[in-house]
Amino acid sequence: MAWVLYSLIGVLVVLLFVIKRLIAKDTPQNEKVTLPYKKRDDFLSAAELYFYRTLGMYLGDKTVVCPKVGAKELVFISNCVGKDYMKFFNYIAKKHIDFVLCDAKTMQVICAVELDDKSHQKEGRKHRDAFIDRVFATAQIPLFHIKAQSSYTRNDFTDILNCVHSAESKSFVKSAQTAIKIKKETPDADDLVPICPKCGVRMVKRKATRGTNYGKEFYGCVNFPKCREVKEI
Ligand SMILES: [Zn+2]
Image (cartoon, rainbow, N blue to C red; front, side, top):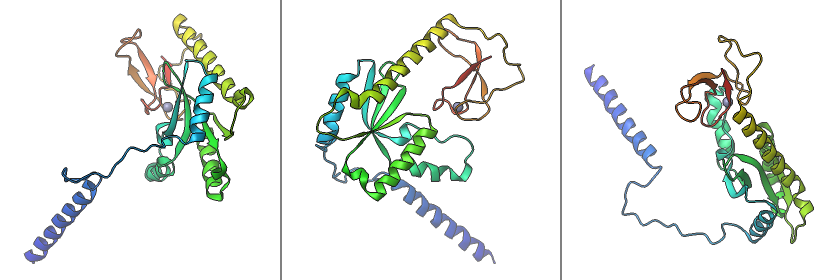
């Protein structure tokens, strides 16, 4: 019966070899293969470029506009979704947002903008837009839809500019609070580990390894660096 065992081992070795080859197909193995890639001249369409330049005129230099950002760079999958992780990941993996506005200093995301042209009226596109709206609402990133036009006035950007100004004042308050280090009157009990307000998971105790708080313990999110929520101890 030993031959059965040897045959099984043989089959397993072949299977492992095939699986390894399949995984390696992510990138070409032969470096001599001529690659067919050419630079695209239409990174932004004429409508997108016009919108980008007009919006830039209304924003100060404290805000950066990033075009065509992958949704997976903006949100992450929180909590224990277990085997459903790839399902939720694939829903967003190939979706892009037209413009993302970030704080120029920290590159933290302030809000996102979708420039809606005629293609957004198609059924499939409407379904996709509704899903993206839900994703961003869940992740608490304001997402604005602006209709593509041949010219814009300041009114077309009111919601976006209000959002940017409110983010600027929030970040000012936050940095002021950090500077004067407001002490809590009722600190958390040592045995009471806080829950991350963003992810809803229990936080973990960490020690600052640099900066002005060097050596100080604090609670951080297990999803760091994707989630940077912290709580003082
Ligand atoms: Zn978190």
